[in-house]
Amino acid sequence: MGSYMANISSTTSFTLSGFPEVEGLEHCLAAFLLLLYAISILGNILILFIIKEEQSLHQPMYYFLSLLSVNDLGVSFSTLPTVLAALCFHAPEIAFDVCLTQMFFIHFFSWTESGILLAMSFDRYVAICHPLRYSAVLTDIHVAHMDISIIIRSFCMVFPLPFLLKRLPFCKAHVLTHSYCLHPDLIRLPCGDSTINSMYGLFVVISAFGLDSVLIFLSYALILRTVLAIASQEERLKTLNTCVSHICAVLIFYVPMVSVSMVHRFGKHAPEYVHKFMSLVYLFVPPLLNPIIYSIKTKEIRKRLCKMFLGPKL
Image (tube, rainbow, N blue to C red; front, side, top):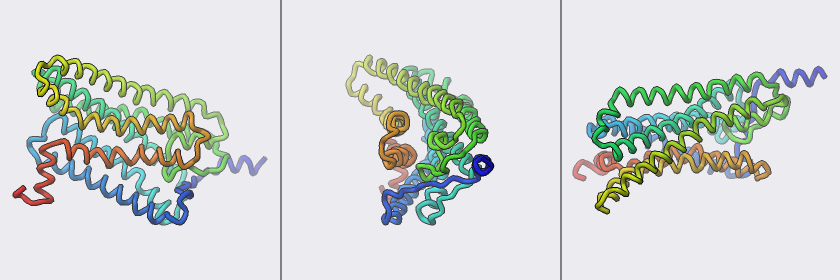
């Protein structure tokens, strides 16, 4: 009994399981993931640099894009240390408090991204449905207030999670499914009652991702109604084209996120590698593809990139 209680009270670290399914190919996987990290980090830094330098991009939509790039950098840097430690240095141990800190930042940046995408959909709604009021509604001050509100909302939602976990006794094997700490992974390990944690997690998912996705859908329903009222087909296509980048960003964020949630909720008997793959897609794809999409679809960013890499004559 005494050793059991000691086991409960002495939770000081977790073991990150990494990718045992690819035993013998760890170096190849590490090289591939490092390449993805490099592309993601470089791409988002370039987006920030171009928006800062290009005067024509000093507009509300690109202020939100800047925040999205900063947020994507946060996602990448939140997972990079433990992925490197587990794959490259074979150091899968992570301290309990460090794990909770990493979990906090991963979920903070995830929920912040959802709020940024909602703000960007509002920007598109005002620009298309109320173009004459755009400059009055989305002033620099209003954009700054929206950005701060998004960050405060995310912080307030994530802040209770580490404390709700710290109150629980951990007496099971301290082995995590992923090479980073996620809340759905951590709440499987306590031997105490984790109902409050599960209910709060569900509440946050519904109130953040659920509400944001509904409002984004509503924004595009109103945008589509306005676009269909335009007489010229060419003008309709031109107007819709201004939304393509944002629609892609929404899809590459919400589709993997919904897939991860479905696997965690209903795929408990699915092979472990399925959970790992879906989680990798959820955390790696948006930071990787967002700068690529906006570089391709935004003329000013595309021209600046061509000038930087191919020379001023182009």
